[in-house]
Length: 410
Image 1 (cartoon, rainbow, N blue to C red):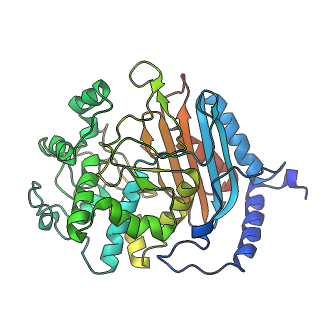
Image 2: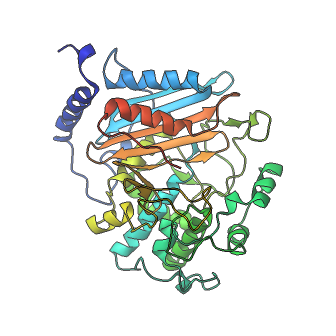
């Protein structure tokens, strides 16, 4: 059968076999250690794309999406078992400055999956239990005796999401460069009536993860950025992923633009201090994002028991619409689509999807195929509302793994 007529599933299977053959001569990695060659890996650069096959298919998807969605840039990396299928960057960072795979961008809630994994590593070592009340470490938190570490990581506390409060939204629009403190953010959430009793439902609330970061620091006596470096970033070989306590982004920078305030303007250095816990406000590049997808999604750093908790900590609200908090903030979930410990389980995929004022990204991992998809996008002047990186990841999955579609979320 000629390559042009081979089905997507067959092409991916053949590619997987080829990459697996290469793995037979590679050293075996122990859980919790950097991937082989992580200390001397090549820079994150665009790969040579052949005239046919999965890499060409992915490039075509990225090109069409860039035009269709008016994206300023699209950066993509796909790997199987950690080995490259394709890495490419389309468009510009700024006018006259081409986007490259080495450019850094904000990874937003991807860092929340690192907090979930770090917590479960502590559970594996017997340092804490998931059902320990957070009042042990955060005694000033209202109802801290009834809120557990599990509830923070799985977002089932009932705490209001301060990001959805009109007063918070108005403040961010008025001054996107403002530096927010964790104390300010938690106060916004805790002075409002809870959406529901702790542990009785599910709803995404940024406040949960600000509190989880604070709890992890108290539990370990280690600053959160240092803890995540020790527990997750270094073991997974994420050399280009780092925390920032200021809005700066390491060079080279992927610049972002947005029309969220009514005028298309640069938003690269708008302050992300409100997005999650201090110490977990990170930037990354596309190679680290793909490596992160596989490392977190496979549970490489966890025991089998902890990995199962990562994917399904008993999140409530599954299989029926949530009804004890507003329909606009509580997601109607299904058994195949639910929240884990700081990440989303979308059908057969383990994923996360950051979105921040002109930046969009997606990391998705399919355990059965060891397939990682990483996408980063920035907006052009007429880019439609929505999550463009997730849409591109869905389209890539439809071609490379047609039996395993990535569902929508939200």
